[in-house]
Length: 116
Length: 113
Image 1: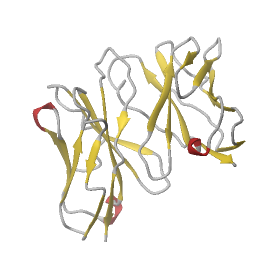
Image 2 (image 1 turned 90 degrees about the horizontal axis):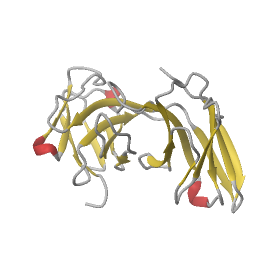
Image 3 (image 1 turned 180 degrees about the vertical axis):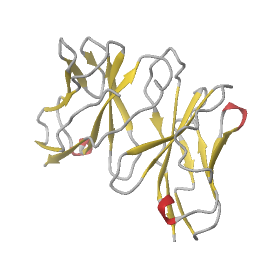
Image 4 (image 1 turned 90 degrees about the vertical axis):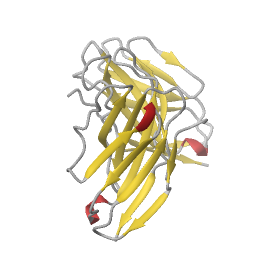
């Protein structure tokens, strides 16, 4: 597609429920990233996928968070047993990056998650 | 980590040039200078990046000081659509962690009609 697509755009869930957030990167982009942005805060790195390499999960805040990327394309971020502090905008980005190149990211519009 | 310092906010009149400064006195020789902006209720948008030489693209120009300790993002004619938070970010050229963007608070640009 022309851009990075995220779904749903908004999600309201009850505390304790699991949620799945989806990201469709730009076709051909090998690198995919998840960030989150809490209200009034900066962006926080969560996880990075590059081709078939093992993902960098160093930014995931707890073991309730996980992500996968199937077939080098679509990615799903899963949050189990959601807590109120998980409320944020979850942003996905993709790029043509490799370890030896330096391109700009293209971000999606994000999923606004509200845990009530 | 190499860090950047930006003013919290700036104002510009519509159709006038805007110069957004960024200080990065601890920049290393392999750090690229990246700029992103974030419009209200949207994800960040890549603007421009450079290493040593000044760079131009359809969105903006990037002027990099000779000692690389500072840079300036230049919007040649501000429009209302340029009202956003502008982030100046240092990224290593390659290696572990080079893919992470570390966003600071940025500069909130207001454009006055």
